[in-house]
Image 1 (cartoon, rainbow, N blue to C red):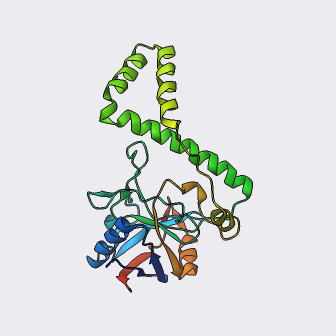
Image 2 (image 1 turned 120 degrees about the vertical axis):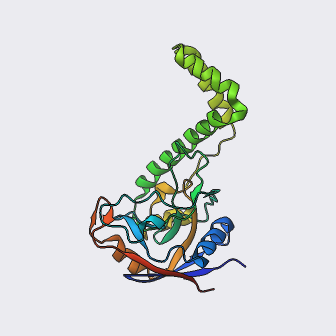
Image 3 (image 1 turned 180 degrees about the horizontal axis):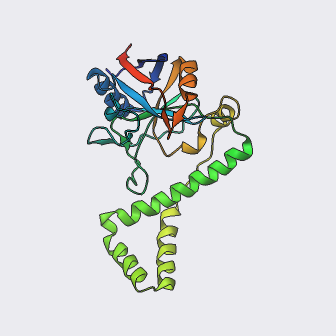
Length: 250
């Protein structure tokens, strides 16, 4: 049975998080690491005000100030579990990951996570973000296509045209591939619940459809806000914010 509720006991206070049933791979992995005491003694190593607080790097345990953090974690990654039902509202628990350029499948880090603090946005802001999300999604489809071994012949042709500077042929090839990929593409649009939340409570809407959201804070949001406002240097808190322990409540 997968856990439903976990407690993060931090140096700033306790945060209770509900885990979503609709993201079972992330719930199972989170539970496994909790049972191994994996997070105990780690830090919230990266904090950006009005954006998020990030933790889960095992290298952050007892890390001296100035140590570069953010690259630690298990050797595996987790398949993305995107759902418009689970979005980046304030208090959302989300999986960190590497960028699209080296991670076109947008797989999640094996251990690193972040909790959204975010900001409140206007409707015009959300429209701009929808456009950005769709632009990124389309670029992602192209990236996946050229990296797919099944499309090796087309990728070689692309590389040849590029090397020979046959830009007209290159444009024709790119247009052909793009047309095929986007023929059945359904543009992403924020739903009513997202719009209501982002224009009142707040969050980080521009991350939707790009990072897996697998839970949300149900108690202790004021603790998350407090952590999100600590003094930082190069995005790391000047005074360490520790995750003392994490345990499964139910």
